[in-house]
Image 1 (cartoon, rainbow, N blue to C red):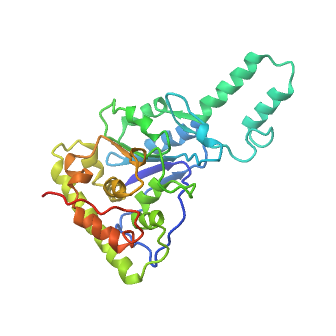
Image 2: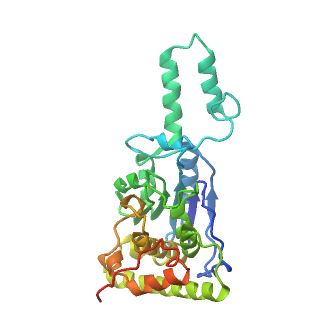
Length: 319
């Protein structure tokens, strides 16, 4: 089973169908570490502990999210050339009360005798603990690792290489979200609940029970087709897509990622910045142009998304 280490997840709300999606797997729930807005040192400590507990047949799943909603002030925060995530400040940060980081800033501002170099050093130290970089994650690639990242800067992780020969799979979220009114992470929402995510983007609030059941059955058909195609397309047993497909928990996320990449290009307002990135990339057999147009159109229609005119009718695919 995969061991999960994650920071906070901010999923978008929105569409609530008439029935919940039944669980597609009866596998044991993996061991999780849930961290809210950790600094880099804390995250490194937990990751080290998680990997120390791994057995020979286990892998680590690291999920990290960082949302910068427009108008929140966070959209202008750049973690630097090697930075991937910026720690989101908690209540009390930066006001001189609450966290140690805030108190340090307050002391520098109030003291007229502090040298400017001291202030610069304090800022640099804060940046080191608040910004996660690609280099920070290199030591953890010694063991099988899957990273799901949802942030405007997530694609910077594409430079992370499997230097030690262990399987490494990166599912990196898009730079922009198609859901403008929600501060949550739509990519994360889709990986966990694709049907609800499609409903949210189309503003479909209610679906009859029978229609929802048909949509869920068709989703399972698409997932099964994607799994079979993936297995037949990969001949290398060491390919991370093949290795992690053996774990039911990771398998569901991987198959939903494939579905995300196939459906989002049909969204009428989709731009390149709304598409995710996989490293290593998906086989050509699972590119959007090779996935059945009829199957995608059927799923969209079952959810009422076609009538919402937010998804274009897929072009016919050749077989």
